[in-house]
Image 1 (spheres, rainbow, N blue to C red):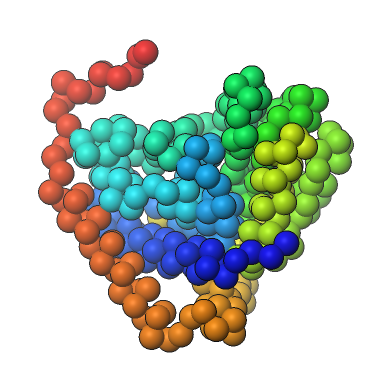
Image 2: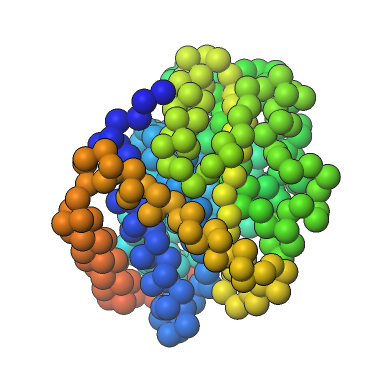
Length: 319
């Protein structure tokens, strides 16, 4: 399924913005200018941007703590992410969300604190879409560790039984917090679990290939919109970054990380676009400059924005 080169170029720009913004986030945290520590997506940007970047504005997405690529890919603005991370009133949750980002205008329905407890939320949104008769799609994006949570299986059954327009997109970065995934489960892949529920499924073995990610997502989105039911897709990649800021990563070898750095999805995409003739070194330099400019504007927005009044602490907590 051919993905337009112009679309791949647009998503390449988002991957670059993601990389620069996450590196800046970590620097700002260490400088005590951002209070929220990092769960970086370094090395797995293609899986995040490729999953969300093909959705329409009124489609829905549930993301992750390591979610900057999927949030930016879905249309969320970096300035709104930094403002929320910074606990400022200009954040879309008025600084109360922290890592748990929400952007209703762009179909980002909020990140839950307990990973995996939002599988039922995604199914519920799928039921809503079916009942309203729209052609929208809802994507639940999650890691391989989260697939071990109890709600995963009944939700797979329900969305299959009712042929809901739901896509479960699993990014398998090979680590469940502080453990290699191969040490915590008896099987290597999540994708084949779809067969047990009669769900269309696929494992994209090279989740660092943005084109392959987009092709798999295009097929799943078209299936959901046309009434063909749900899809489970697994994207195999690698978490180059630590689990979070300060994680010493004693559970893996540095040599392994270096090998995966050579498979950088951004450099892979750049080579593809240059070979296709839609990107030049001059254009690439300009893309990085524009990303740097957007990032600096986001930081200025953050630092000019006020903190909320203490009286705001309990407002908006209860419906």
